[in-house]
Length: 214
Figure 1 (tube, rainbow, N blue to C red):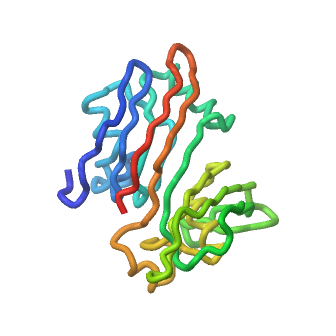
Figure 2 (cartoon, rainbow, N blue to C red):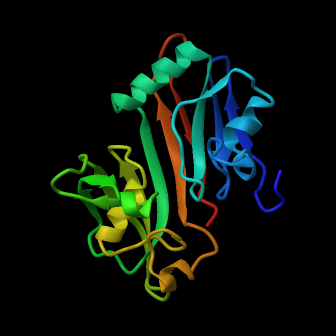
């Protein structure tokens, strides 16, 4: 385990699901190359060999990930995510004082192939993408705002690109923030804070909360 990446914390485990709190800096699944094999799924499978990935978080994003125990639950959870039956809430700190207390960002996203892994807004070919935003706190002295984010859709980098487009990049975002905003935090200040799963198969409904550590 690399010394700079904290351990993976198991918050809930039952016969159907395992929910972990992934630290920032840890991949969700293996990447290409020997140096990218350490990841949340590999660490978890050392203790839960039947744990299967259902959804992912960016390497720089911290917070809650649910793993299915077995293929039947993996299919059921994947269908629940696709049907938007899973409630996810994130917390972020962004540059600037956000004026509106609550609003939606509805902008279509597409892969920015010349600049992979970046995504970009494309009104002609992008996939529909919707984020609901609610202000938690405005820090007048720092010139930042803490937000609660609900990704109604689950596009890659959706929250990061939507907030950038709104004029409020996330602090510490190495992919999208300008240098002065990147320098304001030692990591991406984005955390998957709340996860609510519906009842399925024989598994009861489940809701978990992980406070943002920033």
